[in-house]
Length: 106
Image 1: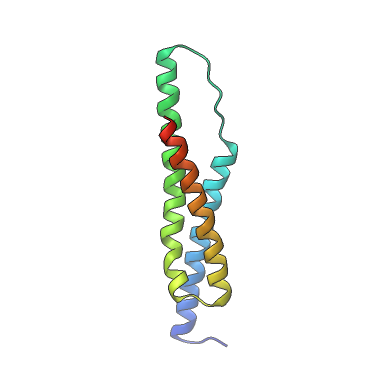
Image 2: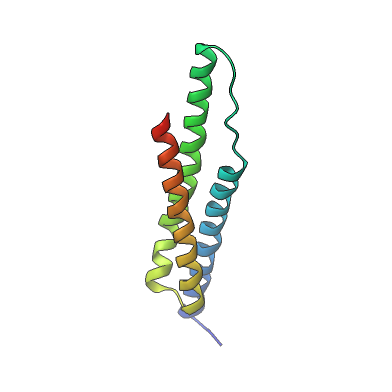
């Protein structure tokens, strides 16, 4: 049984895992549900490109926050937490790579 400071520390790491998981899942959801459809003139294309840039910037921010929040868990977490944290970190890195490559296109 975990008591005292260890219990508080484990609760803190679980909260970090939940927060980062939510951010990474939200970023992944935004990546898989985006749409690139466009038809119109130059003014509308400018608005479309600006909107898509913002979309990917927000998605990348979610992934970046998820990655930053998970890093302390990799340093101080327990066994299963480190595995989950590593998986989330890889997913966040993939989302960031996807966002940066799409933003370079705009």
